[in-house]
Length: 116
Length: 112
Image 1 (cartoon, each protein chain N blue to C red):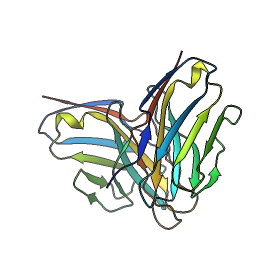
Image 2: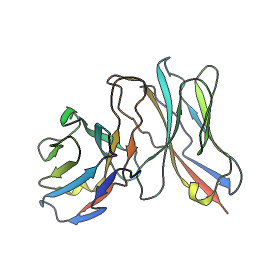
Image 3: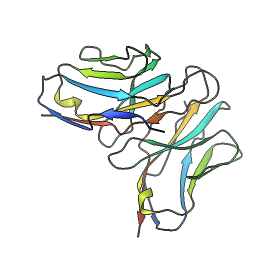
């Protein structure tokens, strides 16, 4: 079974440029998460989707970050314009969803963004 | 979610058991203990989770103390590929308790 797929794996851009990251979750997983991981730190949640609805975007810096999951499957995270401090790894995770019991999250390999 | 405390780093010889401790003294009755690991340049990988009973799967064993205030992840025969940062996370079950709060974890280095 394929895991969470992310692309690109690496991206280098100049500051003030836009950038987008793509995520394809595990088949059948209704819940999708975007996390940000700074160097030497653990991942931090940016946004969570239940199907196509963003149910928690409280940690997403909405002035420059946006995300979408139009058909409840793939998702795109965008930054416009990028700043030097956005250099980090952007991780996508997915889970089955639902409110019963535990709901294990499975992560993709991440996209490493470098802003020059 | 309860806070966890892990040693920043540990070493283990290849082929030996690696025992990674985690303290979660403020854990509440409905909170699970999760373990993830992150190999360099990869995303976090789910290992195992448990509530109060010991758990075992193909990757590892999880031993939770009777009072649930601490736990140990055991890799029975560590290999070089087990070198990674190991995260112990406490998370309540169900509902809106979906957030994984990662600390800094333990860097396990398996030496040849």
